Length: 594
Ligand SMILES: Cc1ncc(COP(=O)(O)O)c(C=O)c1O
Image 1 (cartoon, rainbow, N blue to C red):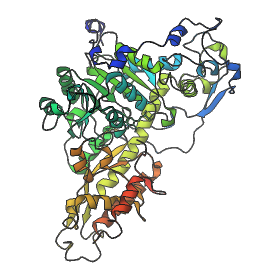
Image 2: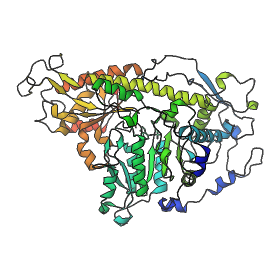
Image 3: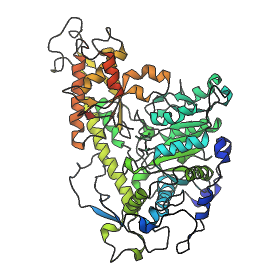
Image 4: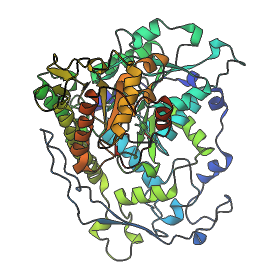
């Protein structure tokens, strides 16, 4: 952004009226306050800190990938298949680094010790720098956002809910006190399950292929204008997954973001953007789908340099990604949740929260008395991998190339490689699904003997399901067209839906999909959820995506050829299977746990 323009930016708004009562009362931890006076070399008589010589770890070491392990996709969405091996790099975190520069100190003595809520300084600085300079180089308020490490997006969301909402109980409180949260019509339910037990009113907003609708029936404007005060106050929070929405795969254009942001300004709503899939954006999806289906390309979502108007991220890859809600956040009303779960590993339990400084300050106070900071093991290993051995004085002998760390260039290259790898998987699944969505008479896929009641003699081509090629993320959301099933008149669609799910888990198909009702936050969504299933192309081996998806398609065909639901319509058995949503030995398209 040009310097003169930067100077014109206004400070973020004071939105402290949205803080919960506990948040307002929260003070900084007395002990943590002391830590800021501590410098290495000082006699520390203050904290109840165990002495580092009694930590049983002398080093933390790992062989890790080089950032180039996976091939980025080119403009046509093509990337090279995964290599079986490459020579690993090494991370060695020593017991004690000799550097006195806390910004460079990555060692066991510091990382495994008590510290401040901000986390290990090199890790916290890397995240802050990446966020402010590269991920969101054009946040339109003075000073820009702050960041705080979290233990992943789930932890981040929990802290946001704690910071901005008061619990409500129907026996204790009046309906006028009940707070609410807006979310997409089908949504990642873990988040909703964080909010619901606090008594929050969950208000679902209609969606299309981009995600949340701003206008139109059931869209945000409609929901807010026609708010039903009998269920509680107007919501002051909006939870949204804007890139590769979980479960529907939608990706929101900048145009739609601006519309939604303007409505949030008008109704004074804070936007919580949960964005674990932001780097997994697939420019090839629209083009490939359009070619196969002769459909139109949505101009709002074509690849471009999204930072052309302002400051570049410094990387063409990052410039080409649809930017966050932070890019339109003039007021400082966006809180963003990031995670390393999809870019490094879920078991890291590491992520970060980005928001205006006053919000981060309050969440930091909460962190001091809850998680304190993310695990030191993880912070040391992740910062060691990315930043390498910092400071020349702490490594015996010359620093080998393999210990120099990925650095920012390597980190961005890694993200780009992941995009290439998942884009190939998305293509493999969608090509196979597209090719198999019709049952065509005469191509060998129709029933071997037609029965009168099935009506097969008169129908030439039957579409079994439909879906949109996802422009990001890990999921394909399919809508099953049960009304084309020969047994549609005989069974309710809900029964057919459950029977299909069981049928697909059985030999020889062995495929596990997630039923749509697991993502329904409202009764309205639940009532239509039977027609949807979420498929995930991430959890299976790369080479098997097409093979397993073919099995799924075969399963659909076989289901459309069934003359009855024998063995599939036992409600008790079905419910049991639904309850145990884990079936051994099956192609897992669920992505269990997320
Ligand atoms: C939208 C969304 N938010 C949050 C998570 C969980 O993230 P984390 O592992 O960082 O808690 C997932 C995992 O799939 C997700 O899809």
